[in-house]
Image (cartoon, rainbow over all chains, first blue to last red):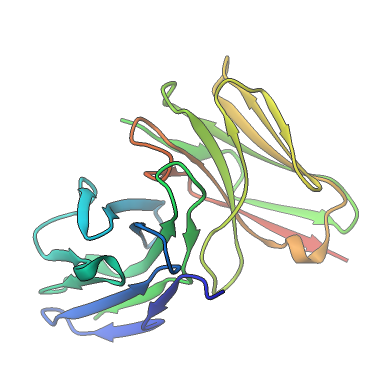
Length: 113
Length: 113
């Protein structure tokens, strides 16, 4: 069975541009989470989907970040416009239940120059 | 605010020795404490968790100890192997649910032959 997959693995964009990250959760997992680790800091929660609904988006840093999960399958995280401080590794995770183990993807390393 | 931190940023051990990775947490309301392992180029991988009403839990070669009096968490790895080399993160659930995690900064474990 495939694990959580994220695309792209790396992205380098210029400040002011738009980038869209994609996450494909494990098939059948209703719960999908986005986290990120910016340089030198801890991994921080961004938001949580249950199927297509945003359960908790309290970790989203500002309105330049937009997460979607149309149809309740894969999810996208768009950053528009990107700023230098958005550089970091963005992780997606999924779980079958709210209180069950979450499986993480390999992450997308975003570099804004 | 809530925070989880690590006492040692790096730990070097000889193959076959036991490893102990420590972590301090601040939120007494956390229901679960979880250890993750992250190898290079991969996302965090669940190792073991412990519920707040326990003080010890054992897995395969790993033991997690929870001391709620001093808000301290540790991961013990027995007979450390080269494949154990990775960054280890402790995480707590805070008040937001099992997968809305608060991560520590991470400890790098280097195993030498």
